[in-house]
Image (tube, rainbow, N blue to C red; front, top):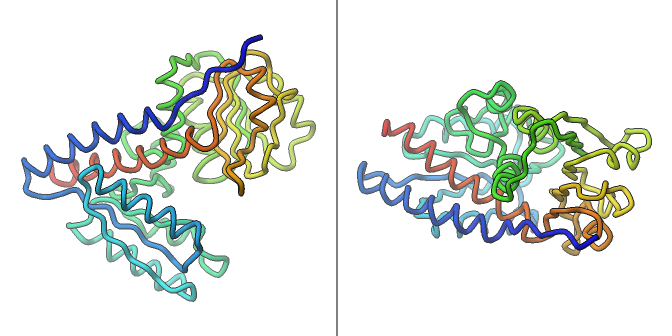
Length: 282
């Protein structure tokens, strides 16, 4: 069997950002207001600082204003919630991103719920999960939304396919399963306590690896011809899939980096412009 085709998230994300930039410019011209994304960072975790800086740079590329709020690592839940509520009530801010993780001493869910649903462009609130689950207008979690866009770009028909999601986080595993279910896939969730994980994965037509364990999914676990989406990112540019062995059996596969990651940021920017348009009534 020939090697899998790579799903190029970098190229698709570039096209989405270019289209988003045109929409942002048009919105700014029509309303006199530039779409604005507020990022909130607690502490100085090096990876989080890098991610936030990358998102700010992408905002500039897309014609989106960015406002950054840096809070000390000792910030309490109540202080973070107050900051997010203040941004939610600020008409000059159209989208809010709380960079996570935020520290074990903070109630992350309480912080997420302080974000107004109409500004939840990262898709992290209960309201956003509900809209994803029930298929009504709202904002998707950015990584799951980016994954669906990538599958669409490569003409992956999900109807009737068996999709296995490895991971059950609130902002990746659970919502991507809901989005796949909405496309008529038959979805199985797996996690760290799943018995005989390899046997379950081997039955999948589509695998989404989002568990946070490097090279968890091996080539021998992949059904020949399956579509493999690696949403993991571990130190050393290593995903949750053992790429070298899986590429020999899959039909389509995402690289790490350059697959899911760029799509996450592109989705965030696109949803920020959509949020601005809705709030401005155009």
